[in-house]
Length: 315
Ligand SMILES: Cc1cc2nc3c(=O)[nH]c(=O)nc-3n(C[C@H](O)[C@H](O)[C@H](O)COP(=O)(O)OP(=O)(O)OC[C@H]3O[C@@H](n4cnc5c(N)ncnc54)[C@H](O)[C@@H]3O)c2cc1C
Image (cartoon, rainbow, N blue to C red; front, side, top):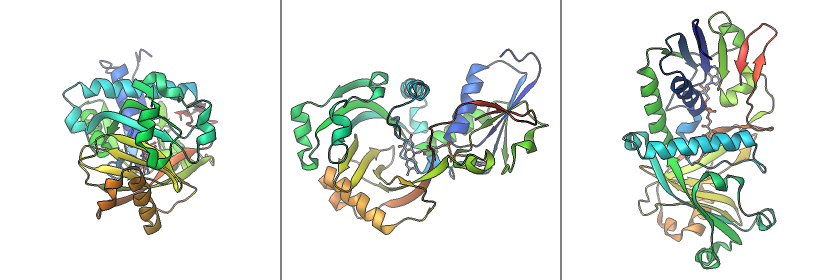
């Protein structure tokens, strides 16, 4: 779009999706003074879902991943890669490392015939683990596994950097406010981009949006420098190093709105992670956090809607 006339875009939501969408738009139109951007959000970092997350790059939650999601995931991977080799890495809390994924107990049948994930072509250094490497994890009884180079970000640092970058652009304005209906914005903007995550359930009346509750424990374990995703007799676990902590996870509890930490989940997570790396048995303290992932039955909604009132919305 050339934007020969003034064009005003409003992004609702200042989580990782809202802020990265804003940055992508600015990158797309770097010198266009006819384009204005307002970011309206009820909450900002450190109170968004991403602030709690493990910040690990890997498309997940889909048996067969939509091609558009794969393109999006590949784009994100390449951005992280270029940022890693820039001067911004430390402030953005971005780490590049090896990630081991082991399939075993629950998913034996699922991965036996096609153990290579669809995203394998997007990443560097992807390879299936050989017999000898699988044996290293014999205590988990895996049947197959792979290793790749990937990224984990400390999302609260990353969001802080995105917000700083956006505030330096005079075309961008931030407003802290809850929106109850898109109609509130219809006379002040040409286009709305809906990045409200779980908030879309009410705001966009999308009943297929549901919470997938996640509980994690942030610990101090500086000897762990790789990611481990694994399967145990108690469920799936993960160990993800970040810039200043290691995240142990986790839970994925559908339709659970409880944001309080559950002691039973904490114990299960610690037990599962110590099954993968026994050195974690000695961990006594950690910061337990809970967040609600925005989950949508048909996957991410990415479409343009023109409402009966004539409002243009990109979901
Ligand atoms: C424990 C845990 C671990 C996770 N680990 C990972 C991981 O390793 N890798 C990964 O990729 N993902 C992970 N996730 C998922 C990831 O955190 C989320 O998918 C992501 O943060 C969602 O970002 P978002 O911007 O869509 O939503 P949010 O961060 O929820 O942002 C939504 C924004 O919209 C605003 N909003 C909502 N409704 C309204 C309204 N009506 N008016 C105004 N503003 C509104 C909110 O205030 C908020 O600012 C994890 C999640 C959890 C809980």
